[in-house]
Image (tube, rainbow over all chains, first blue to last red; front, side, top):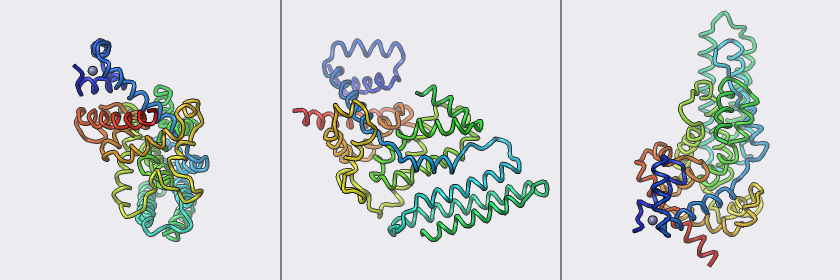
Amino acid sequence: MHSPEHEDLALLFESGELDEAGRADFERTMAGCAECRAFLESVRACHRLSTSARLTPRPELDEAVLESGSPRPRLLDPWTVAGVASSLVLAGALIAFLGRPAPRPADLAWSSGLEERVAAAGEELEAISESLGAETESGDIDDDLDALESAAEIFGEQG
Amino acid sequence: MDDNGEELVKRAARGDPEAYRDMVTLYGPRLFSYLAARLRSREAAEDAYAEVWLRVWKALPSYESRGRFQPWLFTIAHRLSLDMLSSESGRKSVSLDEPVEDGGVTLAERVGSGEPGPEREVLGRQEWARASAVLEGLPEEQRQTFLLREFGGLSFSEIARAMDCPLNTALARMRYAVLKMRSAVEEHHA
Ligand SMILES: [Zn+2]
């Protein structure tokens, strides 16, 4: 007799979450239950439908994503700090890229959230610079911080 | 794809920029499709897409193999969309049936005109438009479960963890979603 439990098993069967014994059990159940087979076919139809509906992000968006974030080395060194700063600037550029010329009032919450994140990241960066102290050639970092501030301004303009 | 993906993630976490690029290319369409369906707006999906990758990039150096990468990625996306939807409750979202501002086509049509593939030829835009209308009408938890499973590729245990609910609840939500989608698709063929 078909039941919702059969359908749960069909879902777990399809998602690969049943162990070998569970799979064999369900295959036996399914062999004797037309509703189980129909349900499983529906699950597969949903999957085909979703796969066919896959959207691709615009290439410019992927490029912006790749520019704004590239993996950081695990060890912190002055170059890393400069790299983090540059990445933050690029994050600003990404935000600028994503910004619309005339944001609707409801967009403000979002862009101000991002602005806070850039500001927080700037503070984080300063703290890292301080912890590195005199060993760091700070010129590049200052330049990056300036650029970071400009990025934050771009933001402000959008807001 | 998963093994390949996990390997890319490991290499990207070690600082390999090529691996990071490949990783974005590999997971990008799934992630973007999930966000577009979840947020019902291409514009919001683009903001969220950039934000999710920014969060991944920030967390990547400390990413150890704590299980599969994909559920981790989609849990970030799931939480971010919840935040976006709750903080933007006043913001107008684009329904799948409504024309988007830059061209007069509906999001459903755009979704239907996404990645080319032989399956799309068979299933067609109409079918997806119908299915997405059903998806729109599902209760929020069923819709989230369906999208995490179908676009995110999460297992039901992973969905239960991401949505902080028992496994049986995740299964029941998917069951209802599938049955409703089935009746929509069957009606279409009838
Ligand atoms: Zn059955």
